[in-house]
Length: 238
Image 1: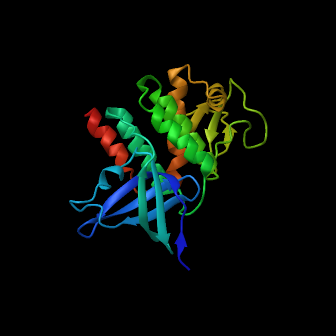
Image 2: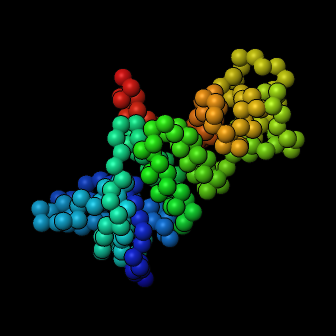
Image 3: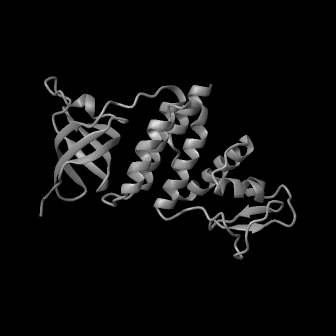
């Protein structure tokens, strides 16, 4: 049976060319989660809508169809495009790619939608860019059921400032008695983990450890396929 949506708040996460005049879209909507849509004819010379169908543009959309790929029927602007440049823009691409890779289709996450919109608006604040990314990554992990456990170790005991902990493959922490170089990339000082849990980003070492911790946490979810957005970061730095 065909489904017809009501007007939905949405953002385009990714688009690709399809046939001569159309686009295939991954969009993130407030009430339906991630949805795959075919935007027919929007690349034609007479179509005024193609400029809307880009990332960082708040939209209101309607679609119709059944199955995984449905047909876009209505496009309206819901506000001005969020203008980002440089590392802020690459950070938005990174966030979008994470969501395309990790979210299941038709799985609603209205709180994540609100958090996503606030996050891309905050990305223009260069001085807090790393903090903004880490907070979004933590929120995303929690939303999809892989939230970080930062209030106790693998045995259920609270974390101690002075102890060093090893991140296990199941995402829990265990005390390291001998801090050798073995598995050093997975070792974290308890004080830093406690600060990450409290979203205390005053120290740059905390942000560096949070970035390392979150990259390790995303690794098994993303698999071996590299993120294209990380390549953009590296090109920008080279």
